[in-house]
Figure 1: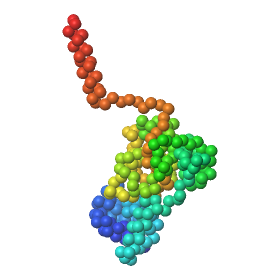
Figure 2: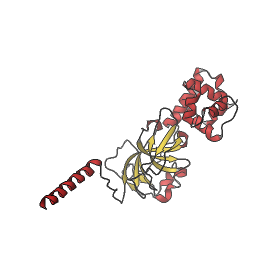
Figure 3: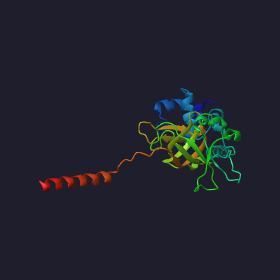
Length: 264
């Protein structure tokens, strides 16, 4: 089974034109048309983009024969994709509790953050990690604190600690809100998340530092997601005056100049 027939069926079920799908994938129409007509085969990167666009795994895209699917098969395929994104197949979260059986907030040391992606499911990984407690945290939610590296998310600076609330359902992440994401390839990243209905299987990761360009990752790259709650820093954020403050300063300066001229 060639991939071309599968992606043609998927596009038609989605009610999209070749041009619309090509634009969403960042391809030109002729290239995408070549894939559908089996004139050319997409490389691995484009296969990943296509599977993410339709909310499927690569295996489902290249091994299933969608021309034989009945409605019940489509329903099963859709439900499976939704389960992956909603976290239905995720592991039970490891936690540390106090002597009073209160759940503590584990603080991931900077030296241990590199090994978090391989050790996060093992309770022993968190042995001897520092912990903290926040009076405003909910007893019905799980929190964890992560070290921040780099300068991509001011006013949160290098060396700050960001506290996050565990998100089981990844589809509940809201557009333009901040999250700590644990990813397979990049480890721990702290970003503003962009969501688009045109790309349901993709997250756009945006930095508050404009020197860093936004980029996209598929849900399949995620290991964990934590909603930003607060951050702890040893440095005060730089105060940037707003437009009204600048205007008030200019008016005060003008008044001072007028008074000086009047005295002369």
